[in-house]
Amino acid sequence: MEANVNRINRKAVEAISNTLIGAREIEIKDKQEIGSLVFALLALGSSAVPVASGFISHFFLFLGEVLFGINMKDIWDALRKPIEHLIEQKIDAYHLEVLETKIKGFQTNMQAFTGAWRLWHNATAATREQEAQNLKDHYTAFLTVLRGSISEFQINSSAVAALPWFVMAANIHIGLLANGINYGASWGYTEEFIEGILRPEFNRLTVPSMTGSDMTARTVISNECSSNITSACPGDYGKKTELELLANSIQAGEAHGWSEELLDTWRTAYSAMTVQRRDLLAEPKDVKRDYRYYIESQYILGRSKVRPYPPRSSKEKLYRLLATARKFRAYADYDAEMIANVLAYTEFWPYLLNGHDMPVSVLNRLDREIFSGPYGNYTDKVTEGMSTLQVPWTDSTLPPVVPRAAGNFTSFIVRADEFVEGFQQRWGDDWSVQYGSGDRGVAHQVDLEPDEVVESIHIEYGQKIGSLRFTTNKRVHGPYGKDPWIPGSLGSLDDTVNRTGYAMSSAHVVKWPGDKFAGCEGIYFGFRPLLMNGDGPAYNASIEPVRTV
Image 1 (cartoon, rainbow, N blue to C red):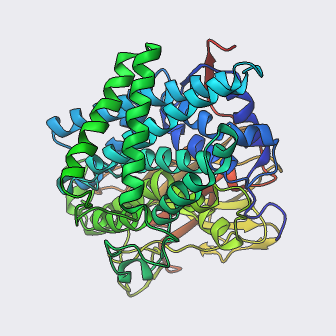
Image 2: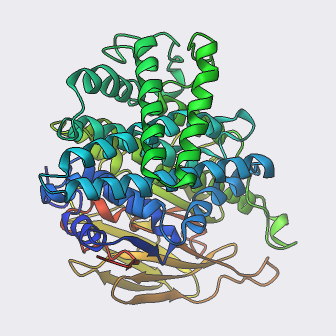
């Protein structure tokens, strides 16, 4: 594998882990960073980076600190609201309150489990057996709470809007299962429980997914256990064991005087299971057994609900090519949100078990490019007298997974005068094709430093791309160009383009005229995750630990 390519950034993961290792509580200053933080912690839990083994065993506790920090509500809202905006579908107020209550219950259980784990981890020989039993009581109850709550995030009327919350709940569920499989024996769980209950459940929920065009062709998983999904069905034995263990946990909690808020979540889960047993413990036929399939199918369903961005002025309404660009830009933003904050996490799940190595194909999908744009004019049809480039996604075609070039994005040339006249870029030693003019305007070449990345782009445009300004982690390059305004035209629009936790990896001009006319007319940008730039700069997350010990 080439240097820099498809390797998780060890420095970034270690920096995040070092910040979290002693924290009782944290605050995330930039709520948009939640996706990258969860990505880093799942990478840690999957052993995809060679860090200290002590960090790996803390992965699940770190995940709880990130998801349930001081500004928890802001963080979870930041995951949900962009999707609601793009599909014009909101979770109704009553159901939103139900989900927020479930999330609060997850927080209560995570904090209690973390406390029990720390007491067990630091126990003396004299108290270790009792602390192990307390830890198992918390584990069993937390797992049951998750199992009983997950369907609330799958209500059909708001399934797409709730998907970013569903995947976070699934991250906790899968992470907790992996934690029990990897370390449960040291707590005193029997091999029968780990191999007969936990591992089959983990396998069933993390079955490898289909991607690309195969995604829509995949058949629904049967409600019966399938030999290619799990090695065993929990069945009635598993349900009885779960119910008995939960009852024991509740009794232990009452005897020890544990928090009533915590015990209420356990009692609610027990009541739900008791009702289920009256129906012979049969799972409802509409239960989504495979988390990965459910997530992918809802992602695709959501694309059919994406609405184009509205025009920002009365004049902008008059230009068809700007309307086409707004339509495709909405799809790009939906795909980017779902890839970064939903789909990427599912790639880690099968590898959270000790001894499971991540193949190159998975690293390629984790490193997939997400897009923003097009900005300016765009047409998905051939135009006489114009050079055009199609964006690599449509309303019915998913954005592709293309491996990173042999080198990182290192240089670019913007040719500009009154407008942006041309653009060319380089990855490693290889230059791209020339977009637009190769001789009109003044050439501005930017050669990035080895640890410099483009974090955002400011673009001014109208019927032409007027100017481009590139902000890196070190400095600002540009603006290049002057003014996209043309007499009698719609005037000037502007946007700042960035993807938190990602760096610009490409730019592509989608429309430019022949030799007789000046100015490129449309452009879109690609971004790849900073955490997949193996030898790149350390990712400086805005995490502030609070009340450390």
